[in-house]
Length: 97
Length: 162
Image (cartoon, rainbow over all chains, first blue to last red; front, side):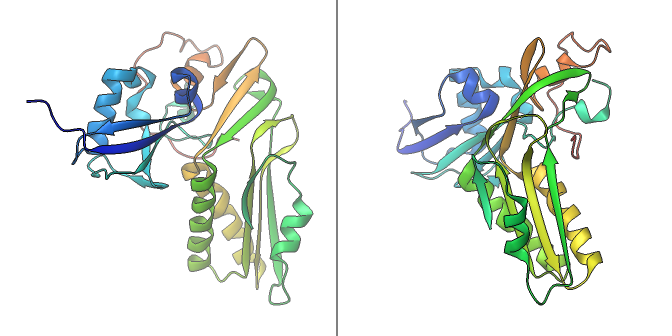
């Protein structure tokens, strides 16, 4: 059975992700009850997001950082946050790369 | 004053914003663009922000600083777009009744900003460009042989790099 795509999300992309995808935002239909991790899995399949290093991507919903089990709601603004300029979520600060 | 701006940062305006007769100290910080990074000769830096969220994060950082120390006022401004070498990309001013609080709180604010602010930095250097913090940033390295693209995709590592 095909799942109902009952929500509309506004996705925002920044930095490396924006550049690789060639756009800064898009709207996307999603199934009710979808979690942040579920969305990242969908985007991995449709956009190749994991190739960008999904392990270091953070997500903000309506301008607040959220965890992977956060449940999305219709109309949410979902920002995919690659590693920020200040330096977290990568190996570089260890000084060995 | 919490803002993202495309204009050069005006430190005097930040200091004026936090100045108050109740304050006995003002500490200011400017983060400036450096000419070299991990052995690369940097030509210019380009910053991008999720502006609405960045400003909200600045407000949260200031609120937390005010909770930890007795502060009078905090101002945080980050520049976006191309920032030429030697110019400020971020400016912070903190006022407090006494010097220790203002210095410690200012230090806290810049460290917190670097961890959480949704701001990205693209470094244009001699021979290429790289998003700071990305896997490619590691791989560009400084000649220590990390250019093999192995799995760096796990999250750890903290703290300011510049």
